[in-house]
Figure (tube, one colour):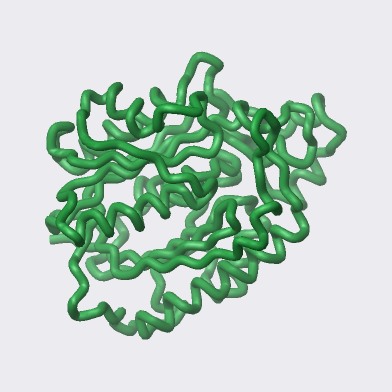
Length: 326
């Protein structure tokens, strides 16, 4: 296995704790067949999603985000008062203002500075990118990056082109300068945008989610492939050196093609979209967290994790993580 290169003057940043939350409710394919003009065969062959987790009507973004945040804090072995920055991300919020991060902070009892980033499905990873900047410039020492999604707030319940994809979830991670005894080191994070594609995925004010599916799919596949190769090249490694690949949880068929094109075998491709649905900003990070809950014991110090996701903009962001343990 090749050793990943890291810039010699790069400040080390680590993820020390993480947690995800998936509501108990579910929207199954049988439910969709009863409600929409679709079939179980089409749902299976085209998107590969069996169920989507669905929040209860009285569950808020802040409540879901707080569950994941407190889980991440416990996982990291720290206290709420140790946080000095809260970064949130959500596509379907239940408030225009204030930031979801501020409301999550209130629920968990944190008075740390709080704000949101707005990038749809890449929101959590954009938040991670921002957190690294705060940490490496000395403006913060320990950051909570969270994402929470409740798709009923933005997806038309009668739209057969959108409803079958989306589910609800929340995720949180602690990002810090101190090396944890068990965690992940952020080796590299890279980003790109095609602002001329901004109209391909959008939610107009007062309206529902809408997407130009064909244009978006073509762009997404090319963008993820290009970003993945850029990260691998910069690190001086190849796809065979990657222990785990985590992609945007758009639909299973799409990310299976992406993994296959990269040469990543199925057992190294972590995903949760089949039973959780596309959970937008919480998608890729929750797939990582859920994979860690299953396979953390099999990881070895130095194992590499490649994460690549896309968001409205259109934008693409990728990160290379290294598993660290004492």
